[in-house]
Image (cartoon, rainbow, N blue to C red; front, side, top):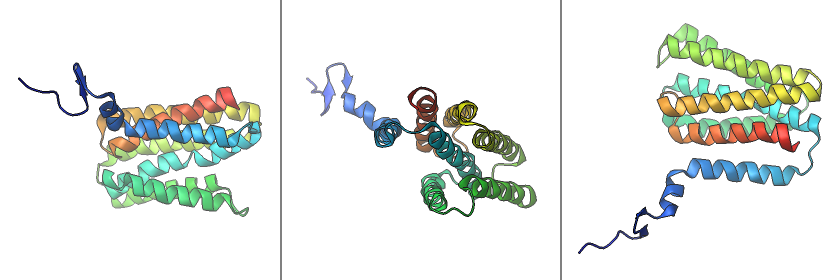
Length: 196
């Protein structure tokens, strides 16, 4: 007679095993929940500005990891990007989105001149994504907050879709990042539309 594996139920693995596999989703929900709790009743203009200034980081991560050619660099690139965003937000000389969009343009130029590990077609797809998401971010921060909310939320939501497509294909960024980022992006879009 066999005995069930440790931490298993009669019907299958313990529910905690599913959470362990879905740690990027759990982490994403926790990060957004903490952000919502910390921001309280945030001013609409501040929320649109903050999320609009951060949105260009998302395609920049994809471009950087694409040019490095190794999905294992995704999380370190995210860490460096967050340090850059928070550092840029602490100064008043230049908007973070301006620097991030400029870096994205340099990476695209680098890929066009030097070539890319995944080929020109994938670079073209990443370029299209960068133009779309950076464009929505810049437009969202340039118009009044009521319209900007929808443009920036659309950028975050569409980037969530982008992440889930990449999660299925797992070519450019790590699968764990694509899952984590996709959940965060969709929740941020919902936060902008319904909680701010």
